[in-house]
Image 1 (cartoon, rainbow, N blue to C red):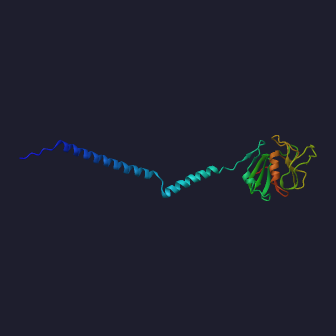
Image 2 (image 1 turned 90 degrees about the horizontal axis):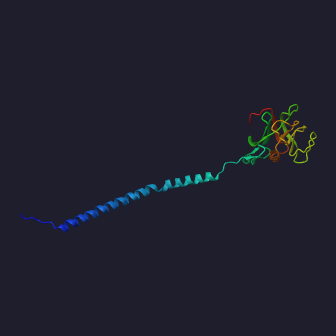
Image 3 (image 1 turned 120 degrees about the horizontal axis):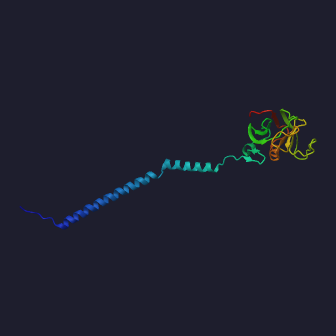
Length: 206
């Protein structure tokens, strides 16, 4: 019987070839998996467009600030966005005697909210619907106190009016409706002859 001897060098060479093949296969598999992972993480087509739209929307919302409310030291609050839509014809002044509050409404929305001071005990502020029949920015003098009443807005030809004056935090006037100076100016500048004024004992809203 013939016995064949395998040369040691041949076995070593075969093992080296097998190792190279295994390493090559492993490298190829790693490369394929790496490409697949990158592709799955990269938005393409519709996904890329949707992502861009979301980012753009978030950026736009960040730039779109909410309407700011101007708060005066007197306690008056002004909404410039609503006030800017005033045409004077779509504007009216509401006075709530019970709450000692005044509201300038534009299309039924509150553009200005302000504290007021109406008649003190023993005096009377008239209730009802009026219109501004006389308007004097400066120079109007009170015949009772002898003091100036800036931004005077007379109620339908009566002796009563709305004007800037001292607000002690409670009803203190002789019958007129006092406003803080800053609020009186804003209201005066955004009303005109004929603007409606509604004075309520208690107002339950627009």
